[in-house]
Image (cartoon, rainbow, N blue to C red; front, top):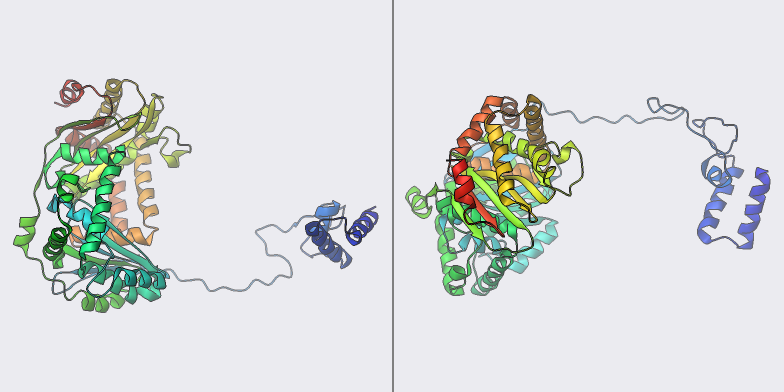
Length: 522
């Protein structure tokens, strides 16, 4: 019967009544069948046949050799294993004579991530210069035009990026390891030797002002700006996004001069760190010393004069609606900021315990479904669209709390529930299982993040800029495991002793802050 079916198919192929794709498949199957296609590794079956032919004509066969055993008559080549490094990768640091620090970590990869980190941001000014520097990153320098920089980066197969924060600025380039000298030259030239052509400044000025227009339609960005304005006085209250009433009233020529002066006094020796992930220290230092030799040393008096001190004040800001939802942030002061090492470790566990996310998210424990804000807020209030922890930490202070977005509903009831969650943790009303889950989630998040060379580079740059060194990852993970129930409860108690900061967008009662929040945490 099988031979008869084969003959019929062969006749159809010759008569051209099959599609070209099926025809080619059948021809291949017939050829294999005629050659008696088989393998010693394939078990004998009652129906016989095999390969492509069995899929067309029926029958079945299977490999009986278990996956734990080698196939018969198959030679497996011996592959030399890569020996594990004798010790975990360490961060090496060299300080140049002008104060610039060079920090590297060899990751034995074919790619590298390079970043220049500068201790400056919107805490130093309120005219939008930080925002403008971010816009003007990798534009014309004293040695290269914007076009040439673009072409060189493309030729290297690299990617560049920049970021402006309230206390730090980042300039980064990623590419293959063999192009490190060329990548470093482009990066350093772009940061150290900017020209600030008037026509480029004017173009980026218009883009920066457009960002402010877009900000008005972005509730999360508005909340972030508002919570800093409400929570702090001084440098940290300065807007990160340039304001039209300041940046919009500056002539491009004057703005270019202001930018040159700002870079001259802030992009200085001890305010800068060159961080590299994916290269040997001995390979980077000679290049960096040559490229960064022209950076002037930092004058401490000038740095103190430029940087505006910040003080936590707390308070509230209510903004009109921007969409059909209500949005709010309730935050408290995290005293000491990143310099509070023990508190920063406890804070990491707290944020994992609070967790949260969107009500539409699907997933298991890895999505935070077992966190307190998911279990007790999102699962109990179907009109809440999003609820998660809020964290904005700086060198010596910070803000920690909860953020939520919801449709209609009772805002007082929701705030009461959110305050109850924070108070429950402060009173130790959580299980040992919750604590261990939060610690495990924190450790998992750290290790997952450090799979990326770009994040390793950023971690090196930020830590060296702040502490002058980088703490070993295993040491930090050990500290996370040591966090106790009392540590977490005491940490939240300290938070709740500070004056609350409340920022809301939408329809909220003016007396909500004084009648509910302040009284509860007085």
